[in-house]
Length: 347
Image 1 (tube, helix red, strand yellow):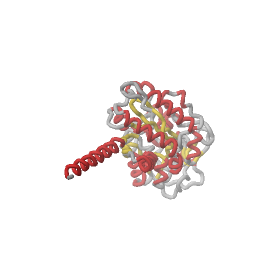
Image 2 (image 1 turned 120 degrees about the horizontal axis):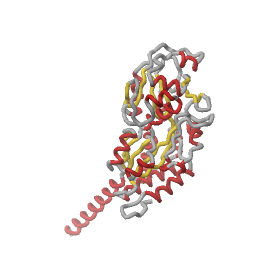
Image 3 (image 1 turned 60 degrees about the vertical axis):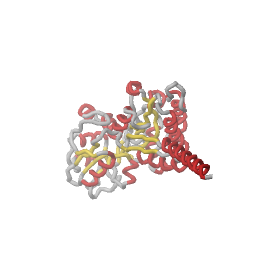
Image 4 (image 1 turned 120 degrees about the vertical axis):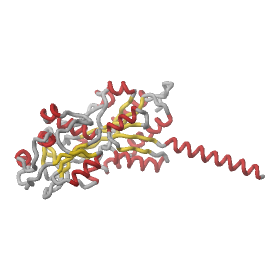
């Protein structure tokens, strides 16, 4: 009898260990862009409730995310700067969009209400080039008649780490200012002319909040959640806008997803009276050949669930979900491009 009980106990123990191992194996790891972190965290929380499978996402910046997926230390990387077809092929990667949203300029100005200050791309570019150094300078005053601007020095705050948010911001400034394009240009990491750096949205936000007269740039959901003072921006059609999801949608309305390899559209400075000028897409990067097909399939299950069930959470956090027509294209790309070592599709 004792032997039977012992054997039964061992069987139960082994079964629990197998179940625990399977559960652990289903936990996914991702790293990269800070831009989508709030929605990925919310999706992960909700997905675990329905599936039991967890996601550990490291909000370390697009540059670090690209490095980690290339090094195969995570199941997927995330970047707000789309990789080119050549870059994807060289690294054996597949790229697909996951979420859209906006980048905003934030300021620390006494006596100026959130959303009151108006700025343009060329003026922001000159601030970041160190050419405009006072908040009451003529180019800023001309955009803001009736607003009492302080004579404070402007302190420029930028990202210190490789960042897709920086790519979107510098791409926009490069499109609206020839001087910025030639002096600094667009990229996830650039050589800034002036200013102090902060790591992640958190670091930029902390510096702007700490330094009187500071200006920085962060993802809109982050700015809104932390009640930061944003500015209006003038878009390509000459309209000053407040950031919101309708204006982000407007910028994405004419995106030509199928014309660029890896869905690599850039939505900055888009035409349309309602288009927010610094709108962006956040991308997921995975290896074409999956060393662990089961884990790769679980990542796809997570994003498939998010595309079908995560729109409400995305809108609540001021992101723009992908249209159904795009998520269908993404699923088709999964079937065609993501395979195991034998060449069998994992989706």
